[in-house]
Amino acid sequence: MTNQIKTTVLLAVLTVMILIIGQAMGGRGGLFIAFILAVIMNFGSYWFSDKIVLAIYRAEKIDPNEGSQLYATVRELAQAAGLPMPRLYLVPDESPNAFATGRNPENAVVAVTQGILNTLSQAELRGVLAHELGHIRNHDILISSIAATLAGAIMILADIGKFAVIFGAGRGDDEDSGGGIVATLVMAIVAPIAAMLIQSAISRSREFLADSAGAQISNSPESLANALLRLEQGRVAVPMDASPATAHMMIVNPLSGRNVLNLFSTHPPTEERVRRLREMEHI
Image 1: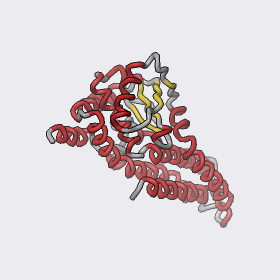
Image 2 (image 1 turned 180 degrees about the vertical axis):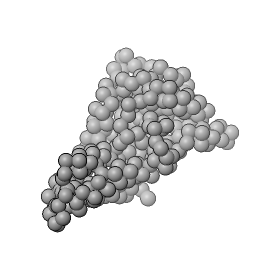
Image 3 (image 1 turned 135 degrees about the vertical axis):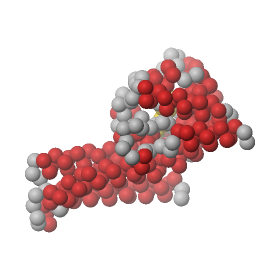
Image 4 (image 1 turned 45 degrees about the horizontal axis):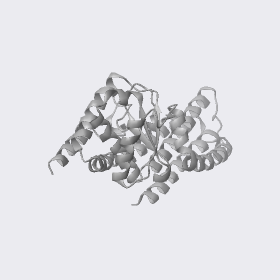
């Protein structure tokens, strides 16, 4: 299945979820409001998802003069990958992590945290940057950004549903008042879980593919493997105040350890990623 088809399917599934939540919360009126919200979110997630994600993490564009070494490294890796030079952003967070976003390679962004710059060696950082460029080359960034935006919207609606239950909304039994308090409460609980499962489905396999692409771009699987191990240790030592809706975009899951079940993890186990990378080293 091509990325275009996957993106269309993802948009359709998450849109239906938004409509179902609206119906459960407010009947026909809620459905209409949810429909308007879905239209806005579909348009906004395509054109502005990168800006939304960068705003969530207060990311600032890196000055080429101040980050000259970083720019030089990314430029060299982008040329090796056959990609345009992406924009570079810094997230002011001491937890080591990184992500890529944007509509397409021509509008791509690579963002790194202050923590990752302080934690990794130059060779390890090079491996991480190559991994993010792998996401861009594999055309993962649009679907990941859309998933983050729409999953965030679903979680907000679910929270509204919980408040509606607390304050007595959704109690009617007729067609115009939705599915009642039970339906509202069920949707408020189930919707975020469904959104996380969708994120997991689109994220896990893509991380393996981006690892493989990053190892090829940097020509150093071992550097990326070492980086993943250090990042796994770093995100435990310095937890990141990350949004669950965007966790799947990070190179390592900033929410790991806070999930009750591995079922909801948006990333494959780091040990398995490292094992595969080290197997590539001997090919």
